[in-house]
Image 1: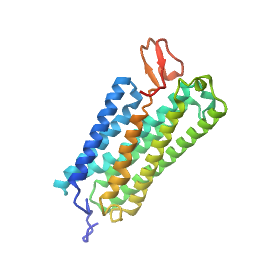
Image 2: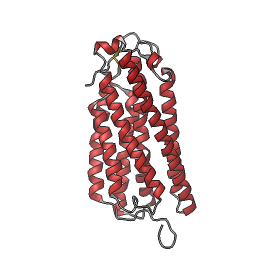
Image 3: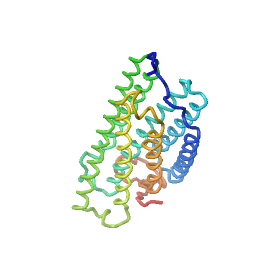
Image 4: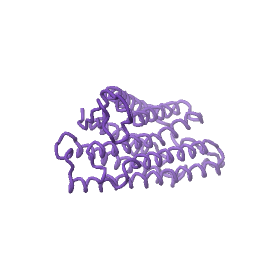
Length: 283
């Protein structure tokens, strides 16, 4: 807040250099993800790629904020799109575990019934997406009371996302331990690179959790808090971490179910379809 009680968009002049570098990084990473997604036809990675698009749009908004620091539209774009992008990454991460379990024919080892596992986490993820988005929309007002309300709503969304992510990591670890004790034939064969996929899931989940904790601390501090009075934390604890998440996901891309020719049925049913190849190798 300013001395006269008005909401201040930035307590600093947004760096055009930092924004430009970040835009290039996310443009390259998003382009690589889009290329690999279309090449492998792994459509469950669409949310992850869209997350990269959201990051890109968000930092374009920060670049605009350098030349137009009073632009409410640019501020809303950079704040909202950067805030909710990790929820899109999370959707693809959640869907990967269910596909891995099915590829290993290890459904009995899952904490949750596999047919519900993806639904539970993705629905929770969608809920956090809309909660944070709604809070960001309320914060667009210059009314201090509405800004505070928006911050509290976003905090609720972030806390919920942390809880959901923690449960997902716990479910992944329990499944991992059970699989090591009771490996299926597919796990033994080595054709399914399940250990590598799980390590990728752990890595990206941990990074997003750290980022979400940072955002919680940031919003608890409020607009006048120390994390919003300087610019570098958003790049170190958000942009850098999310770019690292995209790089790790690309390096260990989960080529789990790549349909070669689907004749009939539903690939999500857990039954391998005629002409559908289950492939857990990384390309």
